[in-house]
Image 1: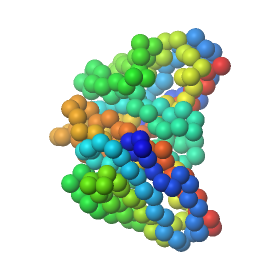
Image 2: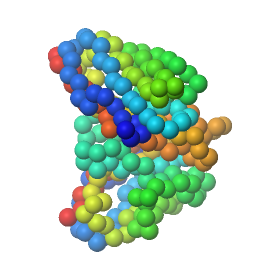
Image 3: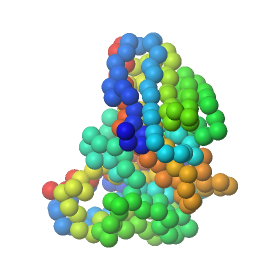
Length: 117
Length: 113
Protein backbone atom coordinates (compact mmCIF):
# COMPACT_ATOMS: atom_id res chain seq x y z
CA UNK A 1 0.00 0.00 0.00
CA UNK A 2 1.39 3.45 -0.90
CA UNK A 3 2.83 5.39 2.02
CA UNK A 4 3.86 8.89 2.90
CA UNK A 5 7.57 8.82 3.73
CA UNK A 6 9.45 11.38 5.79
CA UNK A 7 13.15 11.97 6.29
CA UNK A 8 15.01 12.18 8.51
CA UNK A 9 13.27 10.32 11.30
CA UNK A 10 15.16 12.38 13.87
CA UNK A 11 16.87 15.74 13.43
CA UNK A 12 18.95 17.45 16.09
CA UNK A 13 19.78 21.09 15.40
CA UNK A 14 21.32 24.00 17.26
CA UNK A 15 19.00 26.88 18.03
CA UNK A 16 19.15 29.52 15.31
CA UNK A 17 20.05 27.05 12.57
CA UNK A 18 17.96 26.34 9.53
CA UNK A 19 16.36 22.94 9.15
CA UNK A 20 14.60 21.28 6.23
CA UNK A 21 12.21 18.42 6.78
CA UNK A 22 11.43 16.29 3.78
CA UNK A 23 8.38 14.36 2.75
CA UNK A 24 7.42 12.22 -0.22
CA UNK A 25 3.61 12.19 -0.42
CA UNK A 26 1.65 9.39 -2.05
CA UNK A 27 2.28 9.72 -5.77
CA UNK A 28 -1.18 10.50 -7.14
CA UNK A 29 -2.20 12.77 -4.26
CA UNK A 30 -2.75 16.45 -4.87
CA UNK A 31 -3.15 17.98 -1.40
CA UNK A 32 -0.30 18.16 1.07
CA UNK A 33 -0.14 19.14 4.70
CA UNK A 34 2.22 19.66 7.59
CA UNK A 35 1.21 19.15 11.19
CA UNK A 36 3.22 19.14 14.37
CA UNK A 37 2.87 17.52 17.77
CA UNK A 38 4.72 18.90 20.74
CA UNK A 39 5.45 16.14 23.23
CA UNK A 40 2.34 15.29 25.20
CA UNK A 41 0.13 17.72 23.31
CA UNK A 42 -2.37 17.67 20.47
CA UNK A 43 -1.50 17.33 16.83
CA UNK A 44 -1.69 20.86 15.38
CA UNK A 45 -2.25 21.95 11.80
CA UNK A 46 0.52 24.07 10.29
CA UNK A 47 -0.14 24.47 6.58
CA UNK A 48 -1.90 23.01 3.57
CA UNK A 49 -0.61 23.15 0.00
CA UNK A 50 -2.28 22.63 -3.34
CA UNK A 51 -1.40 23.46 -6.91
CA UNK A 52 2.03 24.74 -5.86
CA UNK A 53 0.78 27.26 -3.38
CA UNK A 54 -0.25 27.52 0.24
CA UNK A 55 -4.02 27.27 0.59
CA UNK A 56 -4.23 27.72 4.33
CA UNK A 57 -1.86 28.25 7.23
CA UNK A 58 -2.21 28.45 10.98
CA UNK A 59 -0.98 31.11 13.38
CA UNK A 60 1.96 28.85 14.17
CA UNK A 61 3.15 29.06 10.57
CA UNK A 62 4.91 32.41 10.80
CA UNK A 63 7.59 33.95 8.61
CA UNK A 64 10.18 31.48 9.93
CA UNK A 65 8.37 28.66 8.16
CA UNK A 66 8.12 27.94 4.45
CA UNK A 67 7.03 25.02 2.30
CA UNK A 68 8.05 23.99 -1.14
CA UNK A 69 7.43 21.31 -3.68
CA UNK A 70 10.76 21.47 -5.50
CA UNK A 71 10.01 18.62 -7.90
CA UNK A 72 7.22 16.22 -8.70
CA UNK A 73 7.70 14.07 -5.65
CA UNK A 74 9.12 15.95 -2.65
CA UNK A 75 7.36 18.32 -0.27
CA UNK A 76 9.54 20.18 2.20
CA UNK A 77 9.09 22.23 5.34
CA UNK A 78 11.83 24.72 6.13
CA UNK A 79 12.34 26.48 9.43
CA UNK A 80 14.77 29.34 8.90
CA UNK A 81 15.97 30.11 12.40
CA UNK A 82 14.93 27.43 14.82
CA UNK A 83 13.82 28.15 18.37
CA UNK A 84 13.69 25.86 21.36
CA UNK A 85 9.89 25.79 21.12
CA UNK A 86 10.11 24.34 17.61
CA UNK A 87 11.06 21.02 19.18
CA UNK A 88 8.25 18.65 18.20
CA UNK A 89 7.28 15.77 15.98
CA UNK A 90 6.46 17.06 12.50
CA UNK A 91 4.06 15.07 10.37
CA UNK A 92 3.49 15.31 6.67
CA UNK A 93 0.17 14.18 5.21
CA UNK A 94 -1.41 13.95 1.78
CA UNK A 95 -4.86 13.34 0.40
CA UNK A 96 -6.10 12.40 -3.08
CA UNK A 97 -8.04 15.51 -4.01
CA UNK A 98 -9.92 13.98 -6.92
CA UNK A 99 -13.44 15.26 -7.03
CA UNK A 100 -14.50 16.93 -3.85
CA UNK A 101 -11.60 17.59 -1.53
CA UNK A 102 -13.83 17.10 1.44
CA UNK A 103 -14.50 13.74 2.98
CA UNK A 104 -11.23 12.19 1.96
CA UNK A 105 -8.87 10.75 4.57
CA UNK A 106 -5.46 12.25 5.03
CA UNK A 107 -2.56 9.80 5.02
CA UNK A 108 0.24 10.58 7.42
CA UNK A 109 3.92 9.75 7.45
CA UNK A 110 5.76 8.47 10.51
CA UNK A 111 7.03 11.93 11.31
CA UNK A 112 10.35 13.67 11.91
CA UNK A 113 11.30 14.25 15.53
CA UNK A 114 12.97 17.66 15.63
CA UNK A 115 15.08 18.43 18.68
CA UNK A 116 16.41 21.96 19.08
CA UNK A 117 19.37 22.35 21.44
CA UNK B 1 -14.35 22.30 25.92
CA UNK B 2 -12.04 22.56 22.96
CA UNK B 3 -12.74 21.30 19.45
CA UNK B 4 -12.11 17.58 19.50
CA UNK B 5 -11.83 16.39 23.07
CA UNK B 6 -11.78 12.71 23.78
CA UNK B 7 -12.72 10.91 26.91
CA UNK B 8 -11.55 9.06 28.72
CA UNK B 9 -7.98 10.31 28.57
CA UNK B 10 -6.77 6.81 29.39
CA UNK B 11 -8.45 3.42 29.30
CA UNK B 12 -7.16 0.00 30.34
CA UNK B 13 -9.13 -3.13 29.56
CA UNK B 14 -8.58 -6.87 29.36
CA UNK B 15 -7.90 -8.45 26.00
CA UNK B 16 -11.14 -9.57 24.42
CA UNK B 17 -13.24 -6.82 25.98
CA UNK B 18 -14.74 -3.95 24.04
CA UNK B 19 -13.28 -0.45 24.24
CA UNK B 20 -15.33 2.69 23.78
CA UNK B 21 -13.87 6.15 23.32
CA UNK B 22 -15.82 9.36 22.96
CA UNK B 23 -15.10 12.62 21.19
CA UNK B 24 -16.85 15.96 21.49
CA UNK B 25 -16.45 18.98 19.27
CA UNK B 26 -17.84 22.49 19.04
CA UNK B 27 -18.22 23.69 15.46
CA UNK B 28 -20.06 22.38 12.42
CA UNK B 29 -18.06 19.77 10.57
CA UNK B 30 -17.69 18.17 7.13
CA UNK B 31 -16.61 14.89 8.61
CA UNK B 32 -14.98 13.33 11.62
CA UNK B 33 -12.05 10.96 11.37
CA UNK B 34 -10.45 8.61 13.85
CA UNK B 35 -6.72 7.94 13.85
CA UNK B 36 -4.48 5.58 15.80
CA UNK B 37 -0.98 6.42 16.90
CA UNK B 38 1.41 3.82 18.22
CA UNK B 39 4.08 5.18 20.52
CA UNK B 40 6.58 7.26 18.58
CA UNK B 41 4.96 6.51 15.26
CA UNK B 42 2.77 8.28 12.75
CA UNK B 43 -0.98 8.57 12.59
CA UNK B 44 -2.84 5.72 10.97
CA UNK B 45 -6.22 6.55 9.51
CA UNK B 46 -8.94 4.25 10.83
CA UNK B 47 -12.29 5.50 9.67
CA UNK B 48 -14.04 8.59 8.32
CA UNK B 49 -17.67 9.40 8.98
CA UNK B 50 -19.40 12.16 7.08
CA UNK B 51 -21.64 14.70 8.74
CA UNK B 52 -24.72 13.16 7.12
CA UNK B 53 -23.90 9.67 8.37
CA UNK B 54 -24.82 8.31 11.78
CA UNK B 55 -22.91 5.06 12.01
CA UNK B 56 -20.11 3.35 10.18
CA UNK B 57 -18.36 0.01 10.52
CA UNK B 58 -14.95 -1.21 9.50
CA UNK B 59 -13.91 -4.65 10.72
CA UNK B 60 -13.89 -4.52 14.52
CA UNK B 61 -14.45 -0.76 14.53
CA UNK B 62 -17.78 0.95 14.90
CA UNK B 63 -18.10 4.72 14.81
CA UNK B 64 -21.18 6.74 15.59
CA UNK B 65 -21.77 10.41 15.00
CA UNK B 66 -24.42 12.58 16.63
CA UNK B 67 -24.26 16.02 15.08
CA UNK B 68 -27.02 17.35 17.33
CA UNK B 69 -24.83 16.59 20.35
CA UNK B 70 -21.60 17.28 18.48
CA UNK B 71 -20.17 13.99 19.61
CA UNK B 72 -18.78 10.76 18.22
CA UNK B 73 -17.81 7.43 19.67
CA UNK B 74 -15.35 4.78 18.56
CA UNK B 75 -16.01 1.21 19.61
CA UNK B 76 -13.34 -1.44 19.22
CA UNK B 77 -14.79 -4.90 19.72
CA UNK B 78 -12.91 -8.00 20.87
CA UNK B 79 -9.80 -5.98 21.70
CA UNK B 80 -6.31 -7.36 21.09
CA UNK B 81 -2.94 -6.50 22.58
CA UNK B 82 -2.01 -4.91 19.23
CA UNK B 83 -4.80 -2.36 19.71
CA UNK B 84 -2.73 -0.71 22.46
CA UNK B 85 -2.17 2.82 21.15
CA UNK B 86 -3.45 6.37 21.39
CA UNK B 87 -6.63 7.13 19.50
CA UNK B 88 -7.49 10.59 18.21
CA UNK B 89 -10.57 12.06 16.66
CA UNK B 90 -10.06 14.79 14.09
CA UNK B 91 -12.70 17.07 12.68
CA UNK B 92 -12.81 18.79 9.34
CA UNK B 93 -14.58 22.11 9.51
CA UNK B 94 -16.90 23.42 6.83
CA UNK B 95 -14.76 25.82 4.87
CA UNK B 96 -13.45 26.48 1.42
CA UNK B 97 -10.10 25.25 0.28
CA UNK B 98 -8.25 22.32 1.70
CA UNK B 99 -9.40 20.17 4.51
CA UNK B 100 -7.71 21.22 7.73
CA UNK B 101 -7.99 18.65 10.47
CA UNK B 102 -8.38 19.69 14.09
CA UNK B 103 -7.27 16.93 16.41
CA UNK B 104 -8.48 16.06 19.86
CA UNK B 105 -6.41 15.34 22.91
CA UNK B 106 -6.53 11.58 22.43
CA UNK B 107 -7.37 8.51 24.46
CA UNK B 108 -4.52 6.28 25.53
CA UNK B 109 -5.80 2.70 25.25
CA UNK B 110 -3.97 -0.15 26.96
CA UNK B 111 -5.02 -3.73 26.33
CA UNK B 112 -3.94 -6.08 29.08
CA UNK B 113 -3.13 -9.58 27.78
